[in-house]
Length: 161
Image (tube, rainbow, N blue to C red):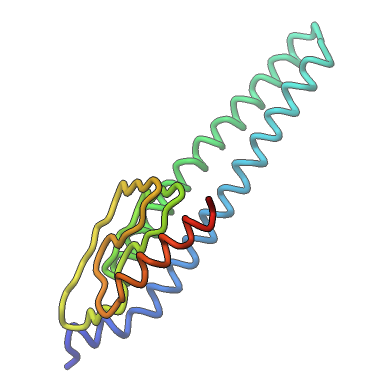
């Protein structure tokens, strides 16, 4: 009988594959959303250039715009679901959920570095990280020379000035 760790290890390639598939689906939805935006823009430009007084044409155009907007709303929802599912899959695979990291003139290590997670059950949920003109480590780091990291961050900021 397999242990939980052995089962988890066996599932890692499946989770990685699913995560990659979700990323591709999310990117595809993004492309379609951008294309829809272009189509809506073209329809509005054409509508301004071709002012028609035919109520049937106007009705058809309005229905088309409404359908395109509805499709965009569906794609936005699909993209959101893909992103949430991808985040969950990554969390199950890595034990990490990292979201919304913003840096300006900063250097950060965010996550786990040189950490042996086997049999430790480490889980991280790191969200809403905002760094401005700073450096640091957010998460868990073992065997990382923090002083060297910080010196490197300071020297790179000085050379930028």
